[in-house]
Length: 280
Image (cartoon, rainbow, N blue to C red; front, top):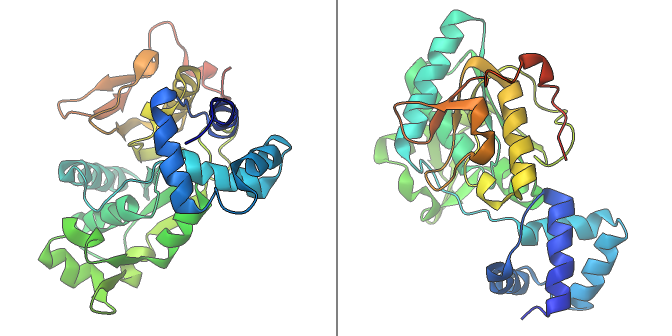
């Protein structure tokens, strides 16, 4: 188990590196993840903490993998993908192209699910829509880029979608077909950073599920504020059912569908103040 000193150092680094708020109940979780990731082998956690505190990029990257939760799956909360795809179609019909963002793509199941839903709604493979998929954890994105998944991982994909969008490569593994993969652009992005250089506004749909609950309140406020700033005035923000916007709810209005929000501006908050800069 982590000592009190190790946990306190990890807590400060989690906040500094990713805006993540760790509390005492996370101590055992960090230990179990650390064992799985091999962090306690060799020089151990103390050496890793030392290196990260001194600005070592490799150590920071490894700690980010320790701090982040990559629990995901194909078509989690299926209605979200239907809503997103229909909204993207309407946006594309109004303009040249629709843009969607999976802001915590993890190992890729969410953005690939969205891409499949888009192909079904748009009814062709040459779609006027793109899916930007980002995550802070580079190791997770490496898995996403390969697009290879186990039978267990694909449990949320029905038989028709498996036949259309996935190719069986072995008895236990499948690969996402190229037509689906071409719709998704993966890149590394830390939501807690002061700039999001690989996000091109305006976006029509933003999935930001299983992220906000882990952020320290001031970071959560700033991230939600900036999500509003890059979302089209008619766009949708989609959260997980376990999440809430907190005080940053002034930037969004709930829709008739649970966890789906439309952008709005509080009467005392003008659009000119949305500069894309994180507040501290």
